[in-house]
Image (cartoon, rainbow, N blue to C red; front, side):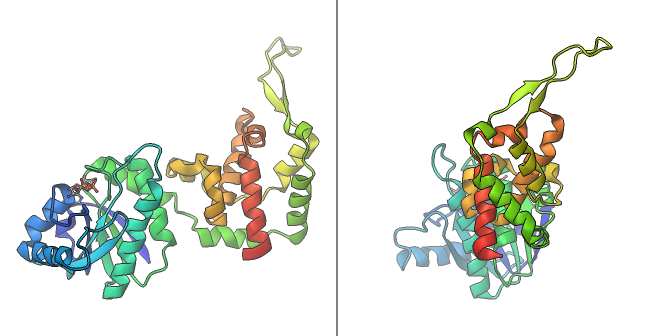
Length: 310
Ligand code: APR
């Protein structure tokens, strides 16, 4: 499936299905919803009303999707989906990802091969653009669907730039990163897990060197002094040949190792790369990852993949 990011008006898109950022009432609103009903004409609302009179009497739940005619739009169908209203302290990612997965599921049911989608929830529903872009694109990239092209249609330059950056972060793909992991020799995997299993609290502690004047009177930059076992792990960790800076800039969730358990193993390899490559700045990022649980989450995810998924 091709994923494209364009700047424009979703009601201008000549595709099989246009996804609407609706609300649960399905009875119209502003933003994308307003534009689709305005341009698509009354036939769309009439079908929405029939849905509300039928099995959607209570409205369309957040994260779900349903199709109607596209009326006068240059498309065959409109797939209405309801994004989450961004709420601090709640799981916003799950419902937003569900909107994209469910929209593709409905598209597959319809036999739609080209689908245009807006930046769901990033308007009235206040979902921060950067996280929404990452969640949307990585959900689409990981969806199994018969759709040939999904086209993210962004209304303004800021949204377009944000989604384009998130699209960049998809390269290399999960499958390519997993292929790299499969090429890691058995003994390297065994060494990694043995080192990790033997880690003690002392191994995780580190001090700082540098800060003194050398013989030329220049003060040496501070540098972290890791245990031998941490340095051995630094060498043993497989990393993805990913452009980790691109991945980081397009992926605001990188700092959530707790999410790794449910994420593709490629994200664990990418995050390992961030810590290994980031170490070049000598600011102890690698050592701290062993103190805040990040590295344990990464190695646990790699081990699950190694033991049961590869
Ligand atoms: N084409 C493409 N994108 C658009 C268009 C358009 N014609 N109009 C607005 N957008 C963009 C907005 O700039 C925003 O980035 O779509 C994104 C989603 O914004 P909203 O339409 O406000 O949708 P959402 O945040 O999901 O809120 C849904 O708003 O319009 C009401 O009835 C709708 O109650 C529902 C709520």
